[in-house]
View 1: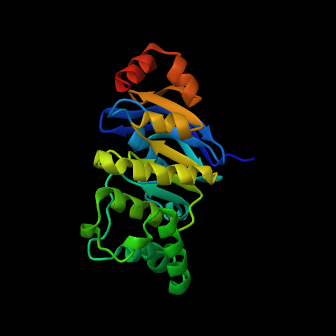
View 2: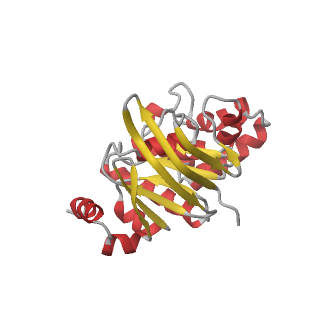
Length: 244
């Protein structure tokens, strides 16, 4: 089975700062790769590079056999197959939840509105929000808005889902609802990249846990194995600190 994603020696710099320092990894279909590590170590930047939102200064990113080149026309084809869920929901405040989810398939991908609406309504059932389908973002809790954002990402039938700290901006009471939806998606066999501080989620759901520090991959292994017996002092120190 061909890899979904190949990163080969990826380097990303902002000015003189090196954010990603030679990142190499391969992601196979159905893998759920959870990225953990201290803030500012390049995890979120890595997702943005995969989606072509940031250009890289070295190495290559290949998604489903196609090179990812930021700021080129070809990146639009990649983005059609990648669903991105950000820390902040970025919903259009003047549109209902349903309209937010339907927007990209209808306006960008030119799909027939009746078919998109049928699919969108099914997605609201998937994210457990059918009762809020006509609400505006201001009427929704943070957790509800994030679940709308997940439905929006699913609306284009992506081959890869990427979550950039999807629960970090939420009230603790709503985190569980979002994680429950993500667990459901994982059980469907979807390929997912997840930047998260929710170590329990990574251990329970992830097929791999990647610990990053200072722009490098320090460890990449089975989540339970890493949590119980991290190979490096740095990973052990980090995991111990977030477990309290």
